[in-house]
Length: 347
Image (cartoon, rainbow, N blue to C red; front, side, top):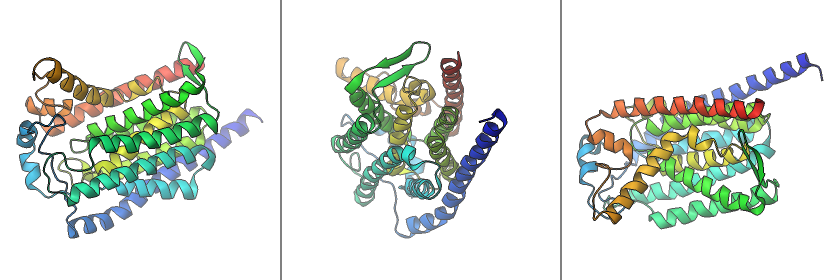
């Protein structure tokens, strides 16, 4: 194949990928009014938590978001982009063989989140409303396990690539690694979803970065899947920025986090995921450090409140400032991750 013909094919493929992203944006925009009318009609209000994961009263959290809690804000809006991504991917993606795994994990985790959101909506708002944490973990773990086994047995992946180091064969250990990455990313994104626009903007940046990576690897189906998610997230974030019209809920955050972890494994860039998603790492890490500090230091806390975005709120930062600055950190980290990918691939 001549170089000129190859360039033409790549440009044509890129145009189609961008077209799918635009289609995802438009479809989400069309579904949003339908969801909004139903959400307000049936009062799909999010119940705020009243206790922390350690069982204490969430006094700081309640004080920080007192004004927001006085508003009735629907949750479960993630169903908009989960449905849009599924429809666009099934109907028009470039390679179903590449996208079956991430789409199945994406939708499966979304279903777990949907159950959690429904319980939250129908609950009293006492404690941490929704499914018990251990049960949610078990469900997400099961999805990651099934996807990991498929990744190992059907796709025959047994190694990982480390930039500037090379490919390392780890055999069946790819399965526990897959589970660790997917479960960690799912929970990290879920934890990050705590301020208006925060998770939507950060996840859109991460998926956009992986769309570029997948395209450069020639995984056009995966690239299209990622960019379709970006298109739908832009629509969602349009309405979710402060003051939010609705929240994505666990149906959205679990789907997005699980899908992101799977994409990182498929593109063999799992080492770059903590860099591209550095804010997610900081958010989840702040919760772990806070719990550990309380247990080992007789209840003493490292942060005023965790996750860390609430710590900055409690320190006097307006919600919008926290969101915008975290977005900037996420964007800079994404560029660094992309540069490391290019260095590892071409040098």
